[in-house]
Amino acid sequence: MARDTTLDEAQQRTNLAFSNEMEMLTFFLTDEQLYGINVFKIIEIMECPKVVTRTPHSHPVIKGNIDFRGHPISLFDLADGLGLTPIDYQHQLSYILVCEYSGSIQGFLVSRPNMLIHKSWSEIIKPEGSVYNNSYLTAITYHNDLSIQILDVEKLLVEIIGIDTVVSDALLQKSKALEAEQHHVLVVDDSKAACQMLAAALDQMKIRHTILNQAQEALDLLKQGVQKGGNCPFTLIVTDLEMPGMDGFTFTRKVREIPALDKVRLAVHSSLSNKSNWEKAQQMGANDFIPKFSPDRFAEIVLQQIERARQ
Image (cartoon, rainbow, N blue to C red; front, side, top):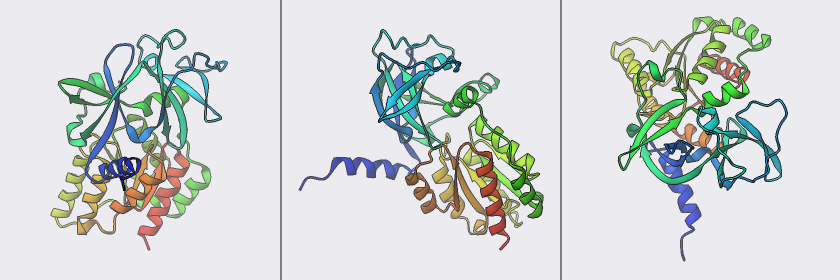
């Protein structure tokens, strides 16, 4: 009997999470530059309808709402958001990448999709230099001598929609009661927007924190502490999943391979918030999963993990 190709594809994509690899959809915007996005974030690719319902007083990058399976979703013009020539979806054939970020669904308008490629996270490079500090570029990779830019879509969404950084008074009081200021949290995330939100929440709870944007750097720091014979200074590690060089799944597995770090709590903080990614993170040894971006949910889980670490 022939194998179910759909099940085969799903299994192949699941295996990527255990091998520091990702499957990427490449696409074009109006500048004809090649861009890439993790396939795990994409629900569907569809042609853009000619009629888009405009939302009054919305951000210029939000072109309006479209119907997706009976529900309205916002349509973001990625080209416009990057300062490029907007996509003329009313007169030219264009496409929508329907994606899930942090439990919500958005449509991203692109000129046209290109192809699917597999890449090891070790082949995905974080750009260095001050010119990239405020850009929407989070990583670069190459395929057949062509550069592929990977966008910090989270940063773009935060700037358009806004982000709540305020932790509720009840959780701040709980933090005080737990004497959370005595603990130290290590955050590993390459997203500028995520790091700003996490730092703001931890500052409000008066919890010491170290923030690194590369998993290998964080792993080296943890190993150095263990090699010196001292106790790990961190009660909790919070890691993103999508990171150049080494992804969060691999980082979690490597942390759990170090016996001296057995008692350190570890939570995944990701916009890849579907159930399957949480299950994969658990298999690697994560203690909890925090969807981006909710300061109260983040604070709640941080305090829960601190409490459990003390038991």
